[in-house]
Image (tube, rainbow, N blue to C red; front, side, top):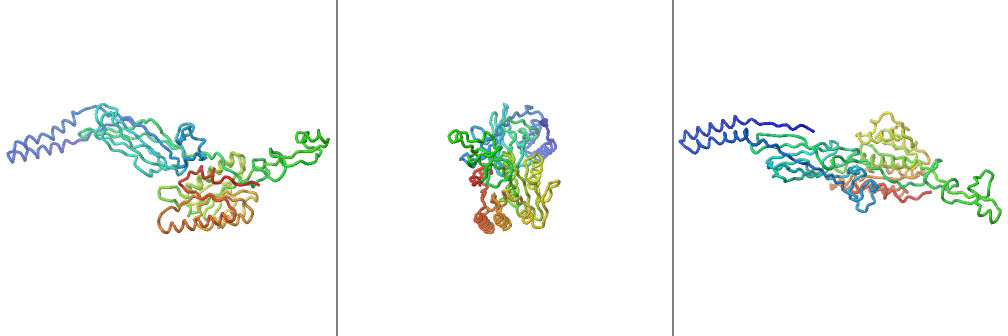
Length: 457
């Protein structure tokens, strides 16, 4: 906490000058009224020096509210919230998704016995979070026990963000005594922005690892697959003893084998993806990277080998599918640098498959044959849809998550929006699962509801 500082403004020079000027005018004009009035600046100066010494006493509280635009309660972040679904997580710190807007209400109350004629407050906004509406500043006069509230909105960025203590400055009635100090607040002092995806549904692409996706072959599992003749070496537990009791024939019950899914999350981070719906919103590349990271975390937690690919203008940087700690760390670093860079290419010490002049061709040549592809792109040009068409032609299962950054009202942007919708329609026509991400909807709902319902093989 900053120590309280008291500054006194020296206004004696203008007070003496005003006294002499008024007195001189009174003497010259022979006016007793002006001569008496000449003492007023001296009275003011005396009040400033000898006036009240009582320090202003204020109390400050802060409340952070995370708006929930999805009132149906289907948001994937819901398990992180308390019973009132007000956006609080288990440790009661407000939490939201990247790009969400949070409302901050900071209330200051004069708890002293004297009025504060000039009180100025600046709330301690976390530096990474931009103020998109309102102001964290106030300039008010407060009677004893009176309070005032400032309200403003912040746009969330990924991470944990702590508020600084607000700074308060007061002036006395004469304006010559200025006190400045920071005030310890009650209420919310932080906001979080990395809620996990609880579940991301999967399609049917599989590999040879045991997992959760059913296949069309027998093996270990829980779903009945077939009954065949007993063969020496079959596990005793797989013998159909009920049939043996009735027919004296040994048969073996097989269950549908389940395989883990190898998945690659592809983030379009070319230069044209660092465009936002407005100057105070996240860019398409940042939104795509956030969605890809949450999807990656959920899939790896479920035991599915998952990789990440970042497509730059002239290069591909990628982390091969895996579930180990090194894969997690490297994938997180790639996505972090993707969010921070104006174009991909600043990452270092990453495993990568290829570097090429055409990143889309490089990706197509290097994907594992059985992988499912999650493509995160705003589809602002034809390259992503052409990639989807080629991948579908080669038999890949493709899911598209496309943040819409074309919501401006000018004619050029409306034309871009029409062309983008046409590209998404082309992707749907070739069998890709497409999610057109309206930014008014939260990322949790998008990933849980819109990508769900994909049939398995």
